[in-house]
Image (tube, rainbow, N blue to C red; front, side, top):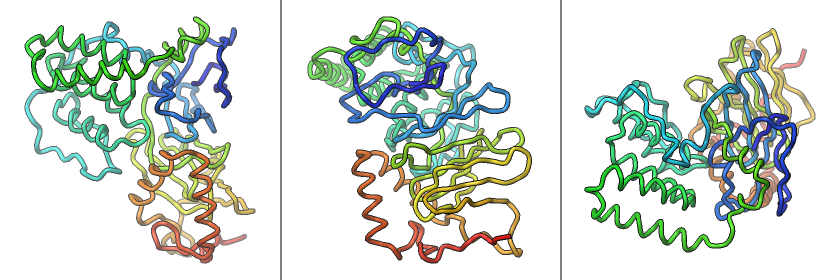
Length: 381
């Protein structure tokens, strides 16, 4: 939960949360803004925040989660997906014809952005893939895709059903119930379909099992209002792992800030394309962890540091006309391993990291290309 002062809630839980009198706006991914203690055994913290040169975009590296990009001046509130009454329909409808010719990657690590505007089939396939993959934040991301389809193609009943399933998986019983009512209101002929009947039973069970007092009801009314009106993220970036240290930087890269760079727990430096969200390259930057990574303000260099007692400088130019031996070759494996590590308790992850290092001091990197005790050194001047 990011406030105007970029401060985050403490790791300690309190029975009463008092609002900050100076706070004007919260920024938070929707699934994190609404606390769900049945899903999260620990509170997340932002390990680094960076603004672009214009001050219009904000990057947030969430510990134990993904990297999120926020439009500071956005009007996209998280309550749009929580409350059907806030639903805003768009003018342009999605195309109905099936676009079987479009290739959506089947690889679980590579769910690409939609390339064809207003193509119903592509948005549905992307949303379904996200819901199926179920990495950190995927369920909420899928819900956003289904909401987009509903806004542009309100007669698509499948999107309503899929959105409700996402809300059930998020344990949002109230929101799931409201969207179910919206489904029945717009499609009364579906009321007796077995799939819809089953949904009603699941929602009823979820409400009964939830019981107790909603944690959000314990906070101050102003605080509650700010949380429920948090501005949602614009896009997110996946691949790295951020669970082990208190600081893990992320920064804009390039003259126009068209790229992002961040370190990771397994010692890899990731570089993403800001617009496509795809990983441009990944480099082995440290034998253990890359925490700090900073681009040069005017020259084409990146500085990185981790557990090693050195600071490395990186340039896109080849050294001695040789290919960079630090490029991560088996990137999909590294990405999937990182996502699995983030899904476990941080303490367990820390123990796993320690066990890996101590039991395999001379082992190899996850891609098997470079042994840890044979990491190529940077040329010194």
